[in-house]
Length: 612
Image 1 (cartoon, rainbow, N blue to C red):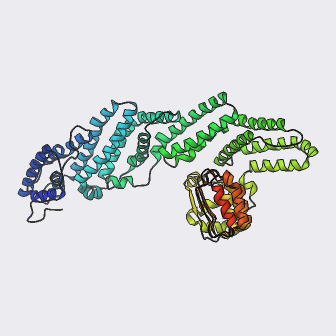
Image 2: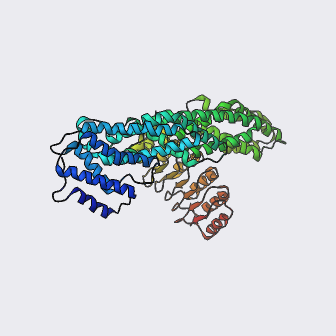
C-alpha cells in the first residue's frame, strides 16, 4: 500500500511536475485535467473511499475515452493527458485497489480494463476496418496495429499497479498480454484474410514489374510475424519487452508464409510455361536465373529470414525440376549443335553455347543443393550423362583425327563443367574433421560435421541460411582441416565472408579450397593472408577466380608471392568482373610485377584498389 508524501499535496506535486516537464496540451484538455485534479485532490484529502462506478467513470471520461478518440483521429489532441491528468488518473486507479482502509476493487478493475480494450476494438476499430478494401485496408490495419501498441503503453501507465498485485497473486495474464491477445482475437483474426490477399496481390504486381509501396508490404508482413507472440503471450510486463522477445513464427507461417509460397509456385509454374512457349531454352535460362535472384532480393526485403530457403526451393522446383525433361533435352540439343559445327577433327565450343551451358549448370547445381538425396533434384547427373554420351560419340572421330586435340577438348569440358565440388576434392580424413569442429566452436561444430559428411537433420536448412560468415583466422587448421572445410563449403549456400588468414593451409589445403570456391555462389569476402601460398598456390587460385561470380574482396597479404605469382593474377583479373579490392601487401613482388598490377586495374570492370 502506498500514500502521498507527508506535507505535499497531490495538486502541489502535479503542478511541480508539470512545470518541470513543460507538457503542452490543448486548452480543453487543460480545463478537463484541472477539474479532474481538483476532484481527485478532494477524494485524497478527506480519506474516504472512491466508489467503483464513480472512479471508473472518471477514468473513462478523462482518460480512456480521450485516448481512444486520439488513436482514431477524432480529436486534434496528440497526447491523451499531461502530467496533471496522468497523476490524477493513476491516483484514482491506485486508490480503487490499495489505499488503506478502503474497498479493494482490484479484480473488478482488472476485468473492466480488459473489457474496455475489447469493447474499443469490437465496437469502433473493427467496423472502421470493415468499411475499407484493398490497399487502404492494408494500410489501415498496419496503422491500427501501431496505434494498439500505443494504447497498450498508455493503459499500462494508468493501471500498472495491477500487474504488481492481483496479476502476480492470482497468476493472471498481465495487462499488456491481455491487450495483445485482444488485438489478435478481435481484429487480426477477423481482418487478416482480406489483408493477406491484398499483400499477396501487391507482391504479384511487384513480380510483374509494377511500382508498389514496398514499405507498406514490409510493415504488413512484420505484423504477421508479431501475431505469433500476441496470440499466446501471458507474462510480458510491457509492449517494449514483448516486441524484444524471440519471434514466434507459427501465425506468420500458417497465415502468410504458406499461402505466399503456394502463390509463388502458381506464379512461376504459369510463368515458366509461358517463357518456354515464347522463348528458346537459352533465353528461358536467362529469365529463370534473373527471376531466382530477384525473388531472393524480394524475400530479403519483405519476409522473415526463415522463408528464404523455402522460397528458393519453391522457385527451383517450378523453374527447373518441373521442366527437367525439356532442359535435359536442351543439353543434348546443344551438344548436337556443337557436333555439327565441329569440322576437320577440331573441337571448340562456341561462346553462346558456353553461356547456355554455364547457366544450365549453375541452375542445376543450386537445385541439387536443395535436396541432395532426392533423385528428381539431381539434374547434374543427367547433364553429366549427356556429356558422357556425347564424348563417346565424338571420341572415335577425334581419336582418329587428332588425339592431342581430343585431350584439349576434354580439358575444356572439364573446366566448363567443373563437376560437383566433391568430385574434385580428395577424401577428407577424420582427424582433419575433428580439428575443424574444434576450430569453429561448439555452436557450429555439429552443423559443420553434418555438412562435411553430407547428412542433414531437421532445422539444418535454417542454420545454413543463417551461416553467412566464418572467421577462422589463426586457428592452426593445417591441410587436413582445410580439406574437411572444403567438403563443407559448397553446401554453405549463404556464406558471404570467409577469413582463413594464418592457418598453414599448405598446397593440399589451397588446392581443395580452389576446387570448391567457384561453387560458393554467395561468397563476397575471402582472406588467405600469411598462409605461405607462394607463386604455385596463387597460380591455383588464379585459375578459379573468374568463376567466383560474387567475390568482391580478396586478401593475399604476406603469402610469399613474387613477380611470377603477380603475373598469374594479372592474366585473370580482367575476367573477375565483381572483384573490387585485392590485398597483396607484405609480399616479394618486384617492381615489374607491381607495375603490371597497376596497369591491369584500368582494364577491370569493378577493381578499384590493389594494395601492394
